[in-house]
Length: 120
Image (tube, rainbow, N blue to C red):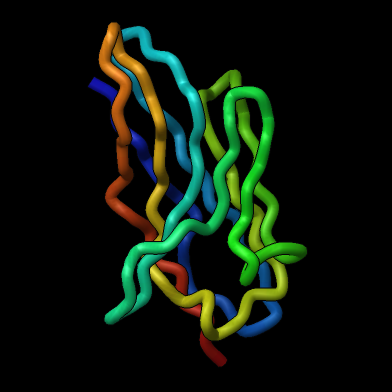
């Protein structure tokens, strides 16, 4: 099976920075079409933050453009999210996402989430 393991969340003051990391662990061979990050704040729906395809194409939510940068570490099957100039409204649980294929089955995979809290 494939597991997405996140790290890097925490508490930061407004204007601060954090880096999230998500590595796809595997015991079997799989292909990656895209990886990325979604987030969910209390009483809100889960929303896209940023994604990156296997070809390197990126997509960002308008609210994070210019502040967040997504990148991939292909050697570790990992995706990174560098977050700068964090705002109170960035507070949420951040979920790693993978559009992966195992054998003939392509499906969405999710990490368990990591809390990001922006507070003074």
